[in-house]
Amino acid sequence: MEWYNYLAAFFAGAFLANSLPHFIKGIQGDKFPTPFAKPPGKGLSPAYVNVLWGGLNIIIGYLLLVHSKVRTENDHIGKIVFFVGAMIMALMLSINFTKKHKE
Image 1 (cartoon, rainbow, N blue to C red):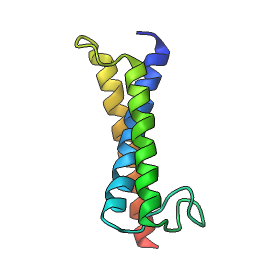
Image 2: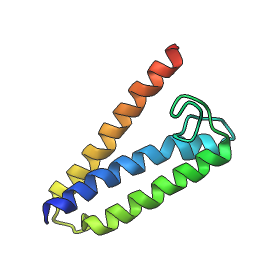
Image 3: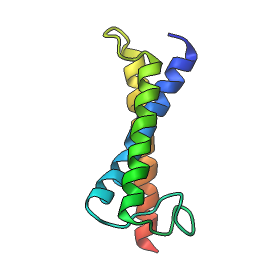
Image 4: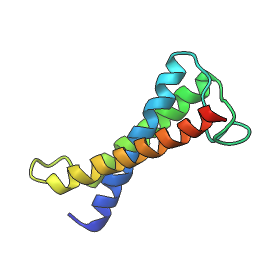
């Protein structure tokens, strides 16, 4: 695979990991921070905005994953890069939301 396929796999993992809290909070009917809240990332957006934002992240992550060509059985490095992207985003989100709850 070319380097840009690995980059796409990394960001696919990041977008898919980012989709989870928004989509889950949205379908639960809870308000949750989005880039569209005031102030961005700190204010709370309504549930429907979170469902839409989570859905957009799923679509972007899926498109990146499909175009990254990670789906081949023998591409273990691509799968690892995808997992690393997801884990880095998950850790960043957990740190950000831990700070938010302490404020």
